[in-house]
Length: 366
Image 1: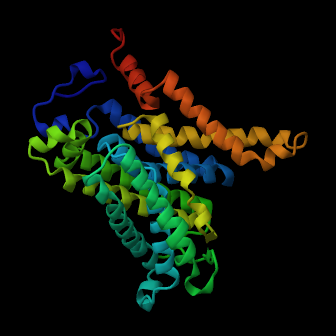
Image 2: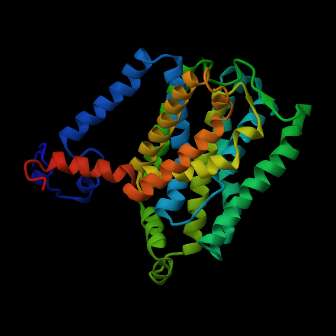
């Protein structure tokens, strides 16, 4: 039977229909409209500043996807995810700048794409290393072990050793033309934007398909009750480590992407506060929801940018405001977390779900 606008008229005859991506023509229309906006409207009308904000949102989505997988779907609390993003960024950078690539690969512009894949794998394996304690500990103790990943990786290994490779001091410079995919040199915000869209779409589709698989069901079972999951025959340790690997893998992609937006990379780009920020993004967006990852990223980046735009005119009267903007940003982040925990504990994704239900079930939305 053909589907219509109202979900109450839709029924499924097989498993494939029940798990279809776009189950009604209305949803298909919405996705086509979204594609038009992302691929046509935003690039055509946005200036360089707006594109840089979009790129920041995309980077936040890529970083928060791994955190959402660990916390929202597998129940493994993490406060060191910036370390795995840093591993991906530095692995990709070192491969581009230091690895003796065959000339044919450099000419074909394949060094950067290959470095993204290698960086993702390295970050995933590094994440598994710090996920090993999850086999024995959880809750507060797991938080401490994931925090250790941040301080060991960024503050010790990267700062004291990796950053010294090639005698560069603390920063790796990325000369113009270094980041390229085939003949496409990524040297402005518009090209970075298109790269961001491709990576975000691939990662979101990959995560959603994983969550619909046997592994995704095992992660949810572990999140809800790991003892019951083990009784049902789920290898809890294996699936926990798999979750850490996938989260680190996506974090490595985020780091590899972010170097395309930077002229130079240093450990200061990956502070511990960024790990905390990503956790706040999924709390605001909605824990256990891919929509929540996107909504939370948009909300946090846009709010901070609006706050900065509001502070700049006041800087002539109170110059110290501009100097102390970092502290204002952190205060706004804390207030946003508190406000959502009190007034909207289920996050923006829950509000979006309510809005969809209201329109889909109209006129019987009560």
